[in-house]
Image (tube, rainbow, N blue to C red; front, side, top):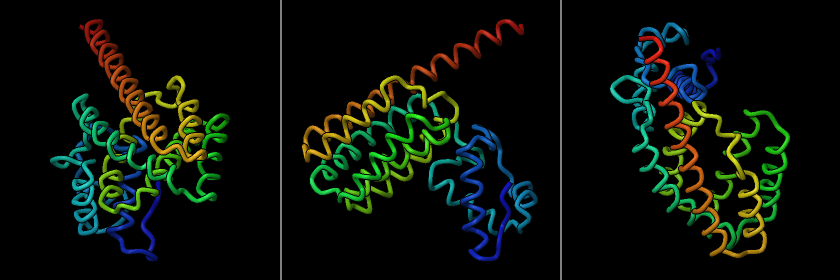
Length: 219
């Protein structure tokens, strides 16, 4: 458990720590959050906790003082926007991503092949972040960041790093960007994200079916 240090404002640190706890699953989907318990855990007053919860609500990670529990509609809505925004990001990346950023993409692909689950997920995040930075549009990047937080939360609830053809699709997007094929990079990114969505929805359906079967057995 991280603790508050005096280097940065307490509310900023509290926000980052609680956000990480939500995304990593320490605070579970649907769990009620109270200022008192979080303040005691992080050893701060309730004021920075109150501000951090307000920011987490703006991020969409907290609703009515509870950790958001993504539904299939949530994911469909988010991915519809991601497909538009990241498709544009891939187009822009193929048009002018610097060589040093190309190297970052390749490193992410190679590390994800042999790394742990956490390393693979981190590489996936950096891969998409690097491409989106090429958009150069702060409004798009703000929207992307908000959506990514909710998706990261969901990914810790499914075995996302095992998605078939994930790294192969990343390699194809990378090759299109390296060759400066803007329209191809855009198309491949959109297809990649649609496959992400289909896999997430499938995992959600299977998880819910298992829970229903377990409940039937208990009764």
